[in-house]
Amino acid sequence: LNLSNAQKVTKFTELNTGISVGTVPIFPGVSFLFGNHIKYKSGAILEYSGGVAFPSIFTGKVGIGLSLDKKLDLTVGVRPWPTSTYLQLQSHRPDKLRDILFTVETMNWGSTSFYQNAMFTVGWRYNIVK
Image 1 (cartoon, rainbow, N blue to C red):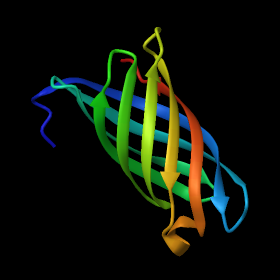
Image 2: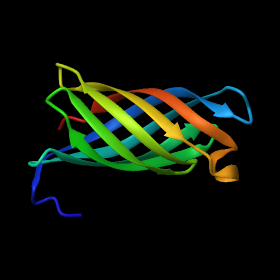
Image 3: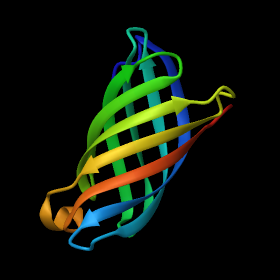
Image 4: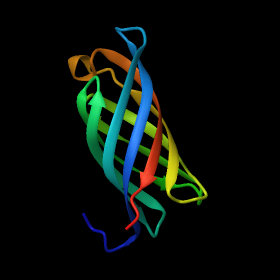
């Protein structure tokens, strides 16, 4: 992981809540993650996180994206457990300590996706300030 071109590396905690749809028509879930958001001088983004979740017990994700402007980032990525691909929109708040996230995920991977088809979440990201 080459951070020499990174403009900013931000450590964060993230709380997500949402629903999945599929075999079980609608099922709620929640996760709490720790991660890193790396923004490069070119505007490219790399982020990764992992933590605890319900009902999956643990979860994680890794994504790449672009900073659309100073207020919005768009990221695509994968979640290995429960298995999914995702599209995430991150809105930066003016206080720079917390952001809001909207994520849509496709989950058609059988048992590794808990037999669900999609997940929709809203999250709150808190930047860890040293």
